[in-house]
Length: 223
Image (cartoon, rainbow, N blue to C red):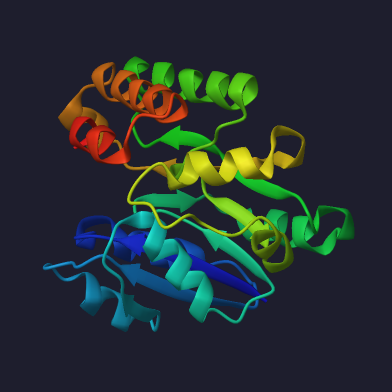
């Protein structure tokens, strides 16, 4: 069984479409929405989709960790609320889970943005380079991992950000696999923050994190 765990915070604009996309797959699955304190319609949307809803303060790390703690699946798919796997993803995920050689490996999706323009293609190319060169997929590429492997590496850290970088480093480059399908992420954050500025800021934050800077200072820059 697959537990699909989605962290949210005022995600009403995107959540409904994401829940519809994951529900289309013919998988034995449950959906858990781990919410960080939404004041919009996020809880109502989760209820309409028959998703389990839990309230978890403290940022994405605690949200994802709490979602895994209440789940019953043998495998986890951690997925952002504005990220939607493409049609056919369920078959690919099912094949990955069925291969016993992947029990202590993890998968992630190709990164794509829902924008046909050249700036979006440049961001996608940068993400592809980061994953290939640094083995650092971010949370908006999803993370497919067995419960056994997740528990063996200690799960998500109880940190408000950089939880995706932290767990990717503990998984290790040789055990991270790019799945042959994309997950499309909303481009709104890039339109708001800038197609160059947002990726540059993210890379700076990762560099500071890997250099040992305090998370509270990185959080100020990130926000």
